[in-house]
Length: 206
Image (cartoon, rainbow, N blue to C red):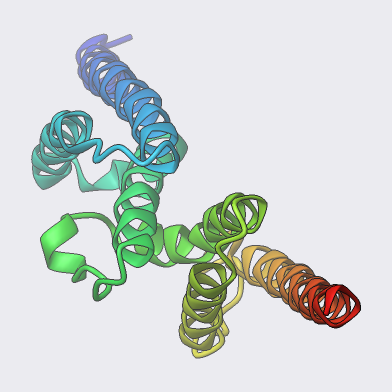
């Protein structure tokens, strides 16, 4: 039985396995550093140096995809793109800036939309931090960013075969916004109550 066809198949699959391992290594590093960057962003740090390193990894992955496009839906690679985009989008919205362009980030379209949905949860985290610090006005501003982001999300209604997991992420974002609206409302009521009590105390003091 001729072995040459089987040999060529094995060589091809071996080469694909090496590409997969390379993608996995770079993707995992990008995901770890994106998580570090997100933590730094919530601490009020810029995280620019960390994100610069992640951007280099994303560019490396893009270069690989240039010759191996069949890996564009590979889970780890998509996650790396998503986590990087999420960190950039979250930082941008927290700073009151415009959403970054897809081309500027250099990530996959699916990853960008997934990251946009995930950023709603990160913005909620920031809102809660602001409420704990009695920064109600800024918390309200960030909440409005959450609503604006969701307005973008609802424009996309595609099945999972086209946008994997997006509908679920959109539902989670909707619930997150509803919970945050309740938190803001309670904080406003609490503030008004405290102001009323202060006025009463001043009158009694007079």
